[in-house]
Length: 296
Image (cartoon, helix red, strand yellow):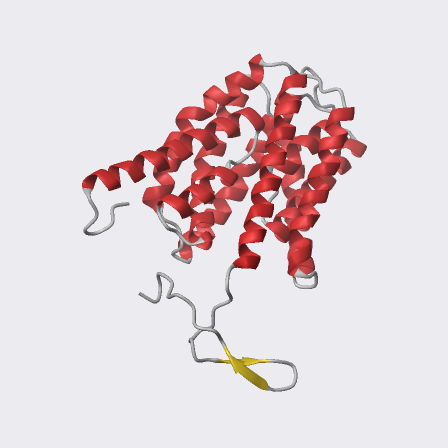
């Protein structure tokens, strides 16, 4: 992760910051049953100057390691359900396809608000819901259908706005299926293992994963995930639910900030002198902008 000609101290500092991002994301993963991409992606873009596409792909590789560590941490406590995870994966595959189809038809500026509305709805329900710790999963027909539905919503939001996973599955398992908070988080992490593996394999084939950075983030996350799991087990279900609501709020703020930055960023042409085409005719030429990293 060093840059040619850069001071050794700068490279060491970047390495430390990337490792710290892994530690932070791993702790959040163990605490809430989420992947931690909300921490990893901005860190990789800011510290290493990655594009969002490469940062997202590298983040998914790190999340694969995080999910394995988190599943193991919750698994030794007996707080995972492979059967529930399988049904959630089935639903998420269907939902993701529906999300990708809807993505082509919905206006881009509407997409972030879909997740904002969902997050507010979940936060309100979590405040009205009394979380429990020891509720086991008795899998029957209605609960199986509910698990597929929760997975479908997670996949739908993932396809639409790139946010899903634990942010949807954990509250869905608690509110819709009625399982305990720790079982919901452990099962959520188990779901991420196959999805992150398949996604990383695809990204590797396209050459958009920085394995060195992903491995470093994953190392920090693997070291910190058991601490997050232990913290989740020590605090009360009520405190855990409140902290999860605050986490959702953080995700919403990050998404709205990203959308605001996207709207303010000047649109760039493939070439500074390329003409801009409107519905009726070619009118003006694109305004020249500062060259990006790919242009230098």
